[in-house]
Length: 57
Image (tube, rainbow, N blue to C red; front, side, top):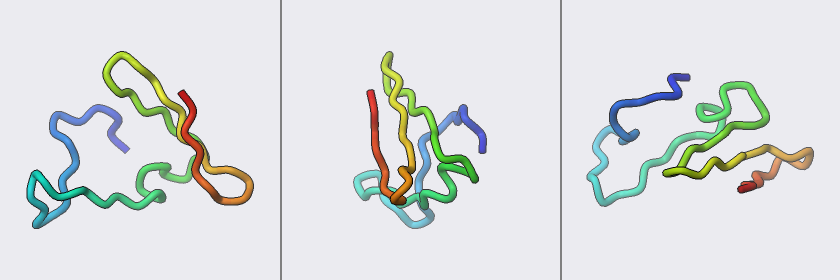
C-alpha cells in the first residue's frame, strides 16, 4: 500500500460530496494495525482479538 498519496482516495463514480468506501482488508494489507496521520496528529487503528476496530489517539 502506498502510504503517501498525492490525491485523496475516491471510489469510481463517487462525487466529492459522497463518502468513499474502502475495505479494511485494503487498508490493513494483512497487518493488524495501521497509523493514520491527520494534520499534526497520529492515530493508531487496530483490529482487536474479537475482530473489532479500535482507534487510539
